[in-house]
Length: 430
Image (cartoon, rainbow, N blue to C red; front, side, top):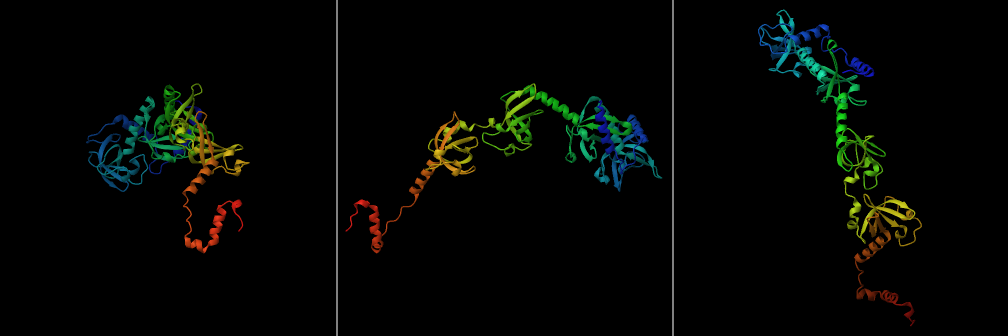
């Protein structure tokens, strides 16, 4: 796959940062690459035993693990030895992290070592020979690979493709990624974009896959989306004026005015980034690929049932949400406000509504009338206060009448009670 000049330079910078000498293996050169090529060409199958020669790929059984070496029975006169740095391209401190007794492993015969001429083997080189064949095929066919991220290094990610593959930071995502650490241990989808066997360089890209998948999703979305549909999306970001919702390859705008039947000051009162939401498609602009969404439209409109919920004469509590010169607005529930006219605030003349209540107060009000078509509810704080006071008097325990003895001991009290109970004009001096 051809890459632009700017992209090539960026990849080269990232690759140079990643390709530092490894301390757990000998330096790789042209001889090693040549040996891999010869091994691949000579044998990629299983060797049954007998004459085992350098350059062959054989399969054997792990029979001993000692220190930083592994002994493998490959059917020769003696076991072959694998040193730690020849076990895997993955970094490890001990062979036990990579293999166990009894494991069947495929290895490349490198030669002999020691006085007894023990076979020297490499599992890493055999793995890499197979990996190169697969990578070359994937580069030709465009196959998407799914390796695990084994390391985060300066400049990008190291992935396990049977050998060390490199994903430059500029090819990790569509935009700039400040912290690559969360990718460690994750399985990602990548495409091979560059191979150089002589330098043992395999460059892969996650961004290319994301771009292709995003294009496919956008086409699918615009072929199926229609105004009036209720669809699922994921909140991608929040702003002061609303939220952007990923509808599957294309972001839709959910304006703050379309979020709730009630009043909210900021979208964060209802939503968080990453929330899955059901939204209604309000408007589509296919030419500009813009989508307008609504959240409140997927829940019942509270004004459709206000007559049943708030009958005339009902007394209930509400929250003062706004004060005007002519009265105050009281929220009965999210999306439903009623007006208490200034004349209905108290049983005395009120010059300014702010003298009686303030925003945020919870007050009791009486429903005077409801007009669901005009979305209006008339309320009275004065009437509610009067009825509450009357009910309190009725429910208060009656005062006990004094006994005859108490009355005799307090004759003047009895006289005064009778006196004040009558009409002052009817009283005559004795």
